[in-house]
Amino acid sequence: MIDFSADALEVAPFLLGAVLSHDSPEGVVAVRITEVEAYLGEGVDPGSHAFRGRSKRTASMFGEPGRLYSYFTYGMHVCANVVCSPQGEASAVLLRGGEIVIGTDLARVRRPTARSDHTLARGPANLVRALGIALGEDGSRLDVAPFGLVPPASVATEVAVSLRTGVSGAGGVEPFAWRFFLPGEPTVSPYKRHPKAGSADFRGDTPGMQA
DNA sequence: GGTACGATAAACT
DNA sequence: GTTTATCGTACCA
Image 1 (tube, rainbow, N blue to C red):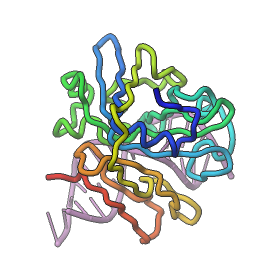
Image 2: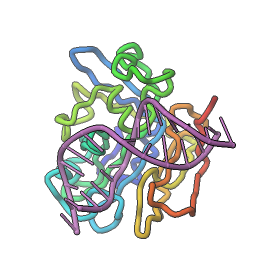
Image 3: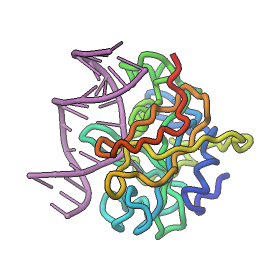
């Protein structure tokens, strides 16, 4: 198993290629994770929800490593993270994209607007919807039912890195290249800078746009 | 191919 | 009252 008590930056590469499954009355959906972002702890990373310390929303981020931190954002979306660092410290890995490997039919039902199968779990809110993860599952263990998390057979040898997507740092500049993805995967979400970011754009090697 | 914008609510100032 | 770890649609090239 992955040692989630390490910090999110260390854990992130081990999640690429891992398979996360979620069971529900409707059935099982599993994704092979292809894209993640690391968020660090209190006072360290201005883009992190934990930056200003513990709050009601972020409580689980300060809790046991290896659990789910899910939160509601933009008035309509849920995003899912894997909690890292020892209890009492906060860091987490945001799951941003993956390839459905089990339950494609159910994922299609949950994501009726997806044009093709590789967009079913492309983007953090889409991934959550495809898996059927609910906001109320915040704090759940990811290694026992209804969840399941299988590490990759071997750690990815080719990992691409870029700035995080949609994050604004001081002055609108996101300084941290803490987004990790498997190059060439069509299930990696397109890079988008924060709306308030300046023109200093860094696109990384974002592939995945395909045809 | 890209860029703009509205939806919609919790958290934060 | 402002911001936000987003998505889908509309529009322009």
